[in-house]
Amino acid sequence: AQSVTQLDSHVSVSEGTPVLLRCNYSSSYSPSLFWYVQHPNKGLQLLLKYTSAATLVKGINGFEAEFKKSETSFHLTKPSAHMSDAAEYFCVVSGSDSWGKLQFGAGTQVVVTP
Amino acid sequence: GAVVSQHPSRVICKSGTSVKIECRSLDFQATTMFWYRQFPKQSLMLMATSNEGSKATYEQGVEKDKFLINHASLTLSTLTVTSAHPEDSSFYICSASSAGQINYGYTFGSGTRLTVV
Image 1 (cartoon, rainbow over the protein chains, first blue to last red):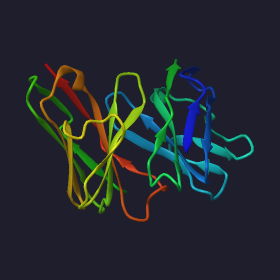
Image 2 (cartoon, rainbow over the protein chains, first blue to last red; image 1 turned 60 degrees about the vertical axis):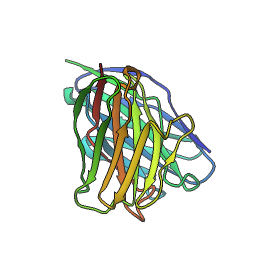
Image 3 (cartoon, rainbow over the protein chains, first blue to last red; image 1 turned 120 degrees about the vertical axis):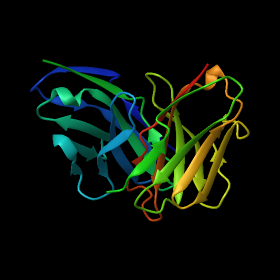
């Protein structure tokens, strides 16, 4: 069984400041972890993924995430927020025992202020 | 990169009618497709998993007779909401994956906003 917890339902940052979105997971087997972004009334876009290679994963649009097995965390960061980063972000886990099923976190709403 | 096309993007239908939503993989063969439902301000809820040529596997609590899923080819899956009611109004999203790509990421459609009046 697997699950994912996004620790913040809402994050507000000023443009140009760092963004941190927190995610903790639990998984019976070696997990694959993803971060997706969703803009209003749109589908999901993959930001980055961890699949047991390098623990520091770089994604699109300047985002990166670090897989920390000891802390069961996969936090998403970006050094400098842009207005276009305002969206909903989902941390997602998939395990080798789940036949490809994705388990979604509850989501974090990011607001970027000028 | 992999592209999944979902149509329609928005549909309004009368209560009691049926609505079909299509999900197409444009440049790869989607051996597995997933259908999700998303309520406002909430996360995605998996409704069912379909493998090409097989019957869909529904998640607990999802009515298979109401949400008919067909995955007849490697590039097309459809979700039909039968006898729709206002409580079926929601945002529906499909995702697709090809063989060997499980756990390596999925491509999502752009979603369908269903409103039942």
